[in-house]
Amino acid sequence: GQQVMQIPQYQHVQEGEDFTTYCNSSTTLSNIQWYKQRPGGHPVFLIQLVKSGEVKKQKRLTFQFGEAKKNSSLHITATQTTDVGTYFCADLTGTASKLTFGTGTRLQVTL
Amino acid sequence: DSGVTQTPKHLITATGQRVTLRCSPRSGDLSVYWYQQSLDQGLQFLIQYYNGEERAKGNILERFSAQQFPDLHSELNLSSLELGDSALYFCASSVEGRLNSPLHFGNGTRLTVT
Image 1 (cartoon, rainbow over the protein chains, first blue to last red):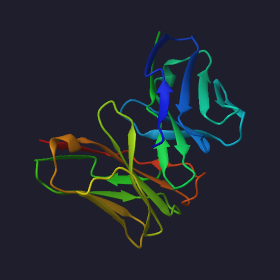
Image 2 (image 1 turned 90 degrees about the vertical axis):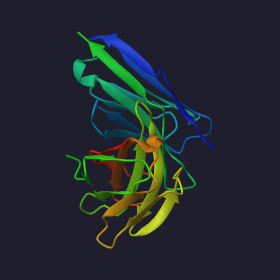
Image 3 (image 1 turned 45 degrees about the horizontal axis):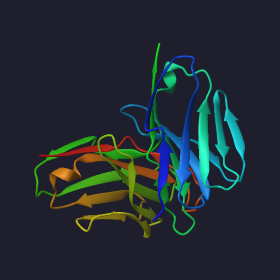
Image 4 (image 1 turned 120 degrees about the vertical axis):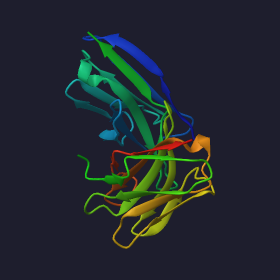
């Protein structure tokens, strides 16, 4: 079956450093959604990418969809302590209305 | 506040028991999803309902069942509980069952099986 892997599993950065998480799929992705889950919280929708090569920005966050639609990335510029949490990518499979979440990248930011 | 309500917040029960988790979706959302998140694990899709009907099934155990009622609230029933069923169970809702609707998650029910 489809697997959606994220790397790294965990990253610890100092505030002000950049951070990137990568989402890779064994199969072609339909759409990609990104979610953030704060410690002790629930996943919160960030953005959706649909088109091959698409790039979207939300303030310090940049989301990219690969040209072949088999990978995606989330880049955070100048991290802040409020960025702490686990970032999940999620693939909307084309054959069923279910959402396959990636393995997640846990980000820790310290001063 | 996502608008999705899950009850109870916490549940502690013994092995072999049966519990029911409840979810009320956001107003206007027809689709409900159930996910399981074990400690430091990802989100495992269990099942989806759309407007009262089962739409998709993930890795849901036979001991687990769910339904969506006419008022669109949903219940997840877990029976013959095992220690390994201890996890955070999330309900999420979306406007429709289409593939490009963002999911809105509730705060989850933390189940502890002792």
